[in-house]
Image (cartoon, rainbow, N blue to C red; front, side, top):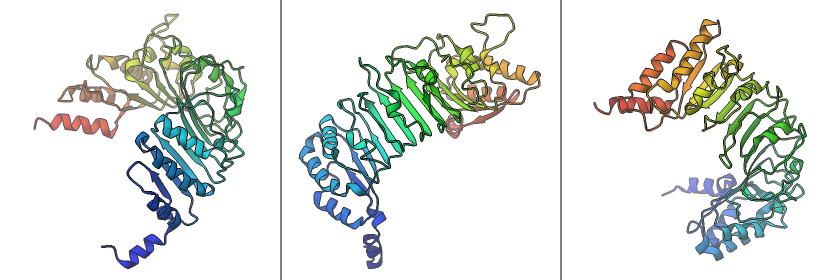
Length: 389
């Protein structure tokens, strides 16, 4: 039983009722209306989730109720919608204005052929964070000039590139993430100026024209993942020293056969914090593809390196995979360089039950670096080591 005092406090506190979750079987029209009333004038967070194909009429009734409070919407999240449900949601929002809307995430937009007009600058003037998944790049796509973070992935298909500056708010954006099919994009070099951009993430099949087009003097973090569609045969971006000021870089590259690692490391020569996958350590820390006999390796360009994160650990060949890294770290110490902090994370299922390879690697790293284990790796190792008693 809830005391009368607590019941009065709960019913009289609008902020408690501001999260509205629309999910099949979880809320009735009567309870939805009651919640909107109890929320008073508080900003609303609208969550529409699940594939509700069998509850089509219920979705329509929900939307008829909640759109009456469009002026109070602060956040909108549409997760894993069925095609028909998403179409109904977008139709209900078209023509409306959302003066307080700041944060929008919509998944699975592969069935949508037009950019949602309720997200246009004149209808959502306060929008700050926007994430759209599997979007068709319609020519009329235009994002609010108030956006601080923009995360868009484009579906695979034959189309011509849209006007890039139209959907990138160049004067306000601090974080940009682009993914999906950009194979047909053609951009003039240095044509996208992002004076406030600090974080850039790319998971695209054609990164070079995007990297060559972007000018970001305040960029501090760059995250690149190979999309594999189609396989990208060269990882350098041909940007010269334009990104030498970036201090944190993450390379999630699966293939060690592609070319361009030397140029890639040179492009980000100012990196202080680097994350790489263990499967590609040989191309970063061995003289593979070297044109002279100096014995230098691509990672030698990271002269300011302070920390190295090794992700996706695996021990199919014992600790031999890490030998090039050990030699590079030892050589760096011998030449008078400071110790690098090496963080181990992402332990794979190939680790033996007793954790011997992981412990062996850790002790080897202690001789030439400052090794650190993520909690997940450490807990897995402890569990494996103690599971037999």
